[in-house]
Length: 187
Length: 143
Image (tube, helix red, strand yellow):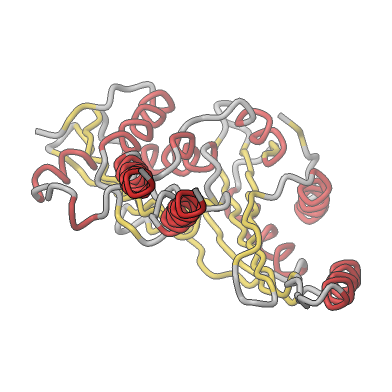
C-alpha cells in the first residue's frame, strides 16, 4: 500500500515538473493582438486632438519641442508621413516597493527561507506623435501614443503596457495648443 | 497487486505527459512544416486598387495606432512603417507599400512576436481586414 502511495506521489511530481517545463506557456501571437478592441474608439479619443490648421510641419515641430521638455529623446522623424518617434529611459525609485520588499525579506527570514522580492528598477517609455489631415480640409488630427516597459531589480520585464492615464495626454495637448497658439479640439 | 498498481501509476503518468504535450498549442519551429518563400509572400501580401501611396501609408499608420501600436519608424522614400506593441508581450509589425502595376499598390506586412517571425495566415488576415476597412477598399491576394 505504501509503495502504491509512493509511486502515485512520484507520478504526480513528474506530472507537475513536466507541466512546468513542457513549454505550454503561450508562444503564439494572441488572437486579440491584431483585432480592434472595444476600447479602440475610446483610446483614439484619449490620444487624438483636432487643430484648425493644415500646417503639419508646425504641429510636429512644436510637438517635438514639448516631448523634449518632457524628457524624451527624438529617435526618428519622417515629416512627409507626419511621424515623430521618441523614447526615454529612466531609473525608478519607489520607496513603497522598497519598503514592501524589506518587509517580505524580514518576514521570510524569520520563517527560515529569506526571499528578496524584486523591485521596479528602470522604465522605458516609447512615444509616437502622428499628424494626419482631417476629412475637413482645414483641420489636422494629432495623435500621441505612449507605451511603457518596466524592468525589475533582476533585470526582468515586470510589466509592459500602453499608457492610458488621461492626464499625460491632456498635459501634452495643452502644451501643444499653447505652442502653436491654436485651440485644442477633442474628438 | 502492488506491482500492478505501480505499473498503472507509471502508465498514468506517461499518459498524462503525452496528453499534456499533445495539448500544447505551440509546435516547436523545428517540427512545423516548412513554408516556401512563395507561400510566405502570399500570406504577408495584399493588393489594393489604388495608386495613392501617401494615403495608404498614412492609413497604415492610423490602423496600427488603432490596434495599440506605437509607431517606431517611418520612411517615406522606402514606403515603410514599423510599429511596436507591448501588452505583456512584444509584437513588431513592419509594413511596406510599393506600386503594383500602374493602378494598384502591393502592401506587405511582416509580424514578429517577440523575436519570432510569424508565418501563420490568421494574424495577417486580421491586419489586412482592418486595413481594408480603413481604406474603404478590398484587400486582394497578390497575383
